[in-house]
Length: 134
Image (cartoon, rainbow, N blue to C red):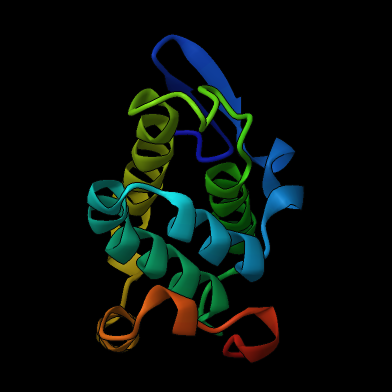
């Protein structure tokens, strides 16, 4: 699978186009605006991608894919606009699942542990870019 360009529902999605939209503050804002049922489905997977992004063992090209995928999640006017009920978040969930499915072998026990710790905190208490691990 070409990780920089995927096809969803017959449309091509280029992650590099969305990389410029990613930052931690907007990611947490987005998660806080999602319906609770959607957040429950996507939060752990988004946190796995985020922790993988900030992991020092992750290669630069994988980080580029992760930034693009997380930027896609943050950007409200992607394949299906986020203000559309259900469908607006479905494409975000699909992108996260596709990327994580292809990178799952890179998720270490340490990353899983950090995600579990973060899941125990309220969304408002999540770290931002300035507090991200090096």
